[in-house]
Amino acid sequence: MLGKLIKHEWRSVWKIPGSVNLFLLLYTLAGIISFHSPIWESDNKIIEALLIFASSFYFIMITLISFIVMIYLTVRFYKNLYTDEGYLMHTLPVSQKELILSKLLVAFIWTLITGIVIIVSVASVMITAVSIGNNGISVAQMWDAFMQMINVQFLEWFRELFGISFFHGIMLFLAFSIISILYGILMIYASISLGQLMQKHKILGSVLGYIGIHTVLQLINTLTLTPLMLNMSNDATVTEVFHSFIPYCYFSLGESIIFCIVFFFLTEYLMKKKLNLD
Image 1 (cartoon, one colour):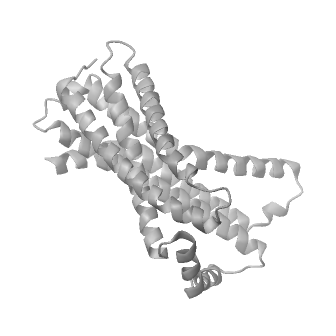
Image 2 (cartoon, rainbow, N blue to C red; image 1 turned 180 degrees about the vertical axis):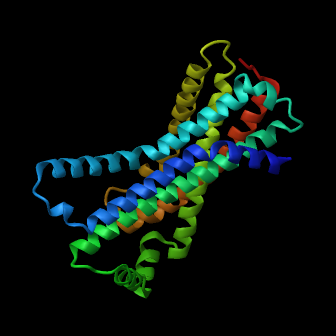
Image 3 (tube, rainbow, N blue to C red; image 1 turned 60 degrees about the vertical axis):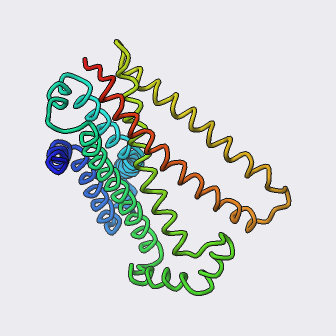
């Protein structure tokens, strides 16, 4: 049944985030094509103004696209489970855990896709700009230059600076990225579930719940980071700073995993025992 829920959820939500991401890719492609045209060398004031507007719009879009996708998925979660639609959803022969998992997985995939699209877009624009600005250096040449940087000396420097291997660092970064996405989504789910406990102004309650949870977690992170900072002497080297920071990274990762579990089961509990539909 979980598979059917995921399939239904995907079919219900893909149009908005899919359209937003596709628009960004097409806009990026148009920008890359324009880089190879003489339009950028034009002295026409109107064309210059249009180019400035197009560039500004791109940066605004890069900044807002993740926010737009997350807001849409958040509204979808709230409307589908805590408004009139919830009367139907909660009568399905599925558990609250399956309802949450189906929405969590789809939201995670679209958040991940959006992040990848943004990275590809920015990287493509930067590579094109650098290529044109350096008399037509090809992408293959840039890649060869990058691979030459990842040599034995670089790997040794990385291990000496961070105290872990380069591969270890990549795996740590990927783990953080995955857990951070789940953490953000589940914190929103928990906040919405807390907000719906209010008889009126449930959206405001959800916002206040999110602020409250975020504030408490920031306080916890500050308290855990303080001992690390206090143990760091004023004359500590850069290497000592990074070596001391790696254990904190693992602690923070473990802490995030624990809170993901807490948010999930809190959402499930409130949905199962404290459901308060409009």
